[in-house]
Amino acid sequence: AVWRAFPGSPRRPIAIVRVPADSLENGELTHLERTPVDSDLAQEQWDAYVSALETEGFEIVQAEPADEHPDSVFIEDVVVMFGDVAVITSPGADSRAGEIDGIRELVESLGHRVEQITRPGTLDGGDVLKVGSTVYVGRGGRTNGEGIRQLRAIVAPLGYTVIAVPITKALHLKSAVTALPDGTVIGFAKYLEAPSVFERFLPVPEAHGAAVVVLGPDAVLLSSAAPKTKALLEDLGYRVVTVDVSEFEKLEGCVTCLSVRIR
Ligand code: CIR
Image (cartoon, rainbow, N blue to C red; front, side, top):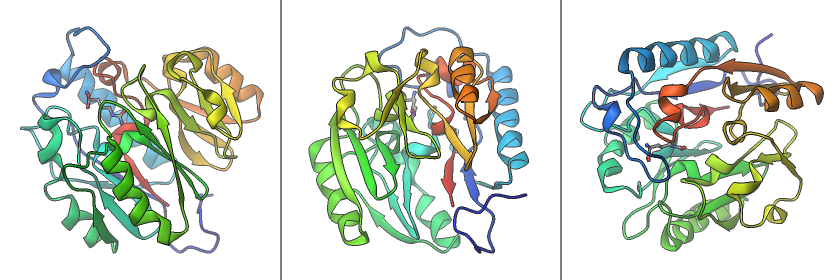
């Protein structure tokens, strides 16, 4: 059965994706050394990622390709959804600022009201983790205090509470932590200053295990580079679907950043 986050919703969940750019291998790197990216393999992995989401019931919506932006495949960074409001971000890396072009039209066509973060505020979607009505926002290399202030002003009237979390050891908040379907925050503790900021925190044994995409009330999508985390989550009663995203991990990406889920 297809999972519907809102009981009775006639719509299937949507996943917005963007095909890898020809220039993918030149993507930004902050914490990792550059290693060669196999662009054919990246395309195959991306196809398999999209198929996995489709198999799990997501309707796939493709954003226009943006070949001039190497990191454009990491579409999660450019738009964040809060119910029927889409917040277009202000990407913190200059090379990524142009990735927002066309995103307003795309989300409006899906029926969303649009808000926007603007410079001098910066904010990457990878820094935004929603758990119920709590919105954790990483303040790190890509997201600044002004970006967080603007996001707070946009989402507070919608009933969300923004909690800012300093991040120094990882690119984005969601490189370090994501949430299980039950709202438990899982993460790689070495990347965090203070896991105690999260109400319910479960450490995972692998860095690539920190990122999960919720597929339904009892299922998550995980990188195949995190087998111990897969075993841990299965032991907690979850069905774990894995995908190999090695070429994106070389560019500090992960399973969450390759799509924007709308439920
Ligand atoms: C970047 O540095 O912006 C890209 N190479 C990786 C972005 C990954 N995005 C994410 O984790 N949300």
